[in-house]
Length: 385
Length: 169
Image (cartoon, rainbow over all chains, first blue to last red; front, side, top):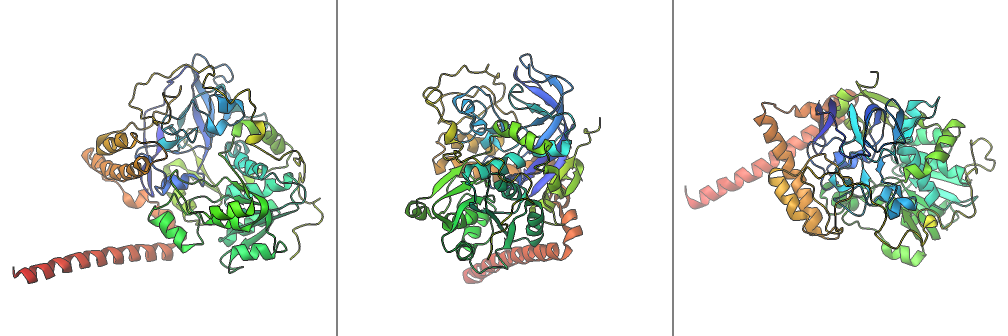
């Protein structure tokens, strides 16, 4: 089968790989029908996540048709068209039992801090990803969810990560009616976080980025205020204080993670020299922009080592920090409802459709923010069969 | 500056998930004493371990399911095995893994060449798309890289020349 193949920082190609096999009685094999490149794939692409092995296939946002199931699979059957949450989750461990499907303890040998994630380095379990014609899906009784009748597969594929991650970012903010919410990062997850903040009753939603085309998109898609931190202000923290009566926002959401721009010291030490686990500029701004007693919600991805953040201000301001990988399975019923009722329009984020064979171009396009790219979708040769 | 909206009727779904009880929220909201005490849940069947799989020393065992993407191999594999002697809270774990990742890039090129495949770096880096949408930016970046590389080479070779002159050879 054809599959994306990581060759090193900023180098990927498509090559032939053996078809995946059932390795566990609860496995399923799916023929991939939709697969996206995610903003967090760029951390792998840039070589920032330790134990990202040459030869791995990325891809944790995908849908597919079940073509084979293991002996103990009862919840899906051959022929079902399923969306596959990015978390590999057993559904039985202490963490899955309390709804923390992103923290499953039975899916990742290499690290205890994070559960298994498809196509996301060996630090997240070494599971092959969905940027391929076929994929092995462990715990098929738990994760894969049959796409409801009538739902557009383009909507379904974004329910595997982008929508739940954006929604959970807003949820973890503990937004109360009338709150001011600031979202750092106008990528797909940031835009979705801004959109979902309204669902929790936010009174004002502001999004900050440095790409005008993304801010324009966010303004229209998420009905929020959008500001360019390079053009509209000298200092984002002062700007946000001033626009919130000098108190700060009730909730700040970091939807950027390790690739943040805006602070030379963070960029050099975090992104260029890898002396910290990525650039923590957005998190730094979030902590300093939130009001005393406010909430900082983090869904931006950072590496597993250390980051320079103003932890003293967290203490002095009495800030609550909440963070986690999205628990997709937990959120799916509500989010499917929102999509079916027209409250959320996930596929509206997709701007590019790229053949899997051109995956290197897709990564470059997304990584360099070329051609006004918001969300690239890979077209699989296997999708139509 | 005024808030985004005083009237939210133009925003589909405004407030439909508002819940004054949503604080404390996920993930602590769903924590109950029932589930959080012991490592004694009914474990799924163990996947046969038929490839080398390194596991964190912060757990006593393998999880029931493991990924089978790329087992450790070669020099990078030796470095990875060394890294897994340390816990996830230790630089001795993560820094060798990052180093192993870079070593594996070189191993990958050697492996390609050994199999008669010359990697098309231009294509693998997606330069075609970059050239199509931002030719000036790409040209500038490549020129800068070439200039820095050239400068380093010049610096190193001029140093060697000086040494030769000093030693009289």
